[in-house]
Image 1 (cartoon, rainbow over the protein chains, first blue to last red):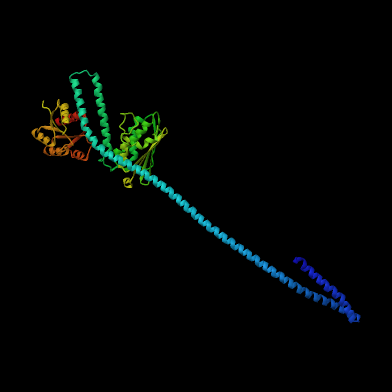
Image 2: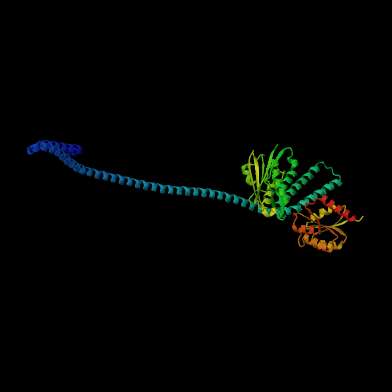
Length: 370
Length: 125
C-alpha cells in the first residue's frame, strides 16, 4: 500500500527534474526576451541562463542525492551492522556449541577409559578368582596327602611284623613238605597264593613308606636333563621299537636343589604312565625350559588320555585304572609328594584319545648354578 | 663242628621263633625278647659272633641296644632288622661302622643267609 502512494525515488527525481527543466526553459526564455532587447546580450544571457540552470539543478541534484543516499547509506550501514552482529552471534553460538561438543567428547572419552579400566579390573578379578580356586584345590590336595602321609607311615611299619610271620610261617611249611615228602601238586598253588599275597602287600607297604618319607636329604645338586636321560635309558626296554622319544631340551643346563633319587622316581613314574597309555606305538615329547627362577618340564604323550572326571583323582593314593594287582596305584601319589617337598607343582592335562600332558614346575635358585 | 653263635633280639616271639627255625640247622641261634635280655645273653655267651636286632622295642630300642653291646664288644658284627624305612639313626650307626648292614622285614632269608656266610668266610680267612 505504501509502495503505490510513495513513488520510487528514480521516478520522483526525474519528474521533478523534467518539471523544473521544462518550466525554467519555458518561462525563463519569455522573461529574458521581455526584459532584454539587445540581441547580443540576449544570446550571452541565454548562455548564462544555461549555466545557471545546470548549476542550480546540479546543486539540487546533489542535495536530493545526498539526502537519499544518506538514508540509503544509513540503511546499508545498519544492515551491515546487523549482518555483522548476526555473524558474530552465529560464530559465538557455533563456538559455544563446539566447546560444548569438545567437553562432551572429553567426558565421553573419560567414561570410555574408565569403562575399559573397569573391564580390565573385572578380568583381573576373574583371573585372581581362578588362581584362588586353583590354590584352594592345591591346598586341599596337599592337606589330604599330608594326612594320608601321617596315617600310612604308622600303618606301614605295623604291617611289616605280621607280614614277617606269614612269610616265615609259609617258608617253614614249605620246608616241612619237602622233608616229609608230602605230594606237592595241589599244595603248590596254595603256597603260591600266599607268596603272591605277601609280595603285593610288601609292595604296597614299600610304596606307602616312600610316600611318607621325610628323611631323605634335599640338598643335592640335581641336573634335570641328566636325570631325564637316565630315566629314558632305564625304561628303554619298554619304550624301544614302540615309542619315539622326542627331547626338546632348553639350551642351558638346568639344576634343582633336591634329591636325585626322588627326582628319578618322579620322571620314571610319569614316563611309565605315558608308556602304558600308548597301546601300539606313539610318541612321548619331553620339553624343558627355564623362565624367571623356575624350571618347567613337560612330558606329553599321544596315548589314550584320561577322562575329565578322573583327573582330580589321579594323585590319590591307590587310584589306578589298571587291573587289580597290576601296580599299586601309588606312582603319582609318590610323584606328587616328591614334587611338593621340592617346592614345585604338578599339573596333569588330558584329552581322551588324544593324549596327556604332565607339567612339572620346580624352583631353580641361582645359587645352584654356581 | 662248632656252629657259629648268632644272637637275635626282637620283642615279637613269632619273629624269634621263625628266625631260629630257619637258621638252626646251620647255626646256633640264641634269642632275646628285649635289649636288657640281649645284653645278658651276650654276657653269658661271649662267643656270639653275630647279632641281629629289631629296631622298635620297648624299654631299650635297637639303637640303644646295639650301641651298648658294641661298647662292650666291638668284634661282634651287628645287623639291624626293621619294618621301618631307613632312618638317620641307623645311617649314623652304619657310617660309624657300628652296624654293618640293615635288613628289612619281612625277612628275605636267602639274603640273610648269604650275608652271614660271606661274613664268616671273611672271618675265617
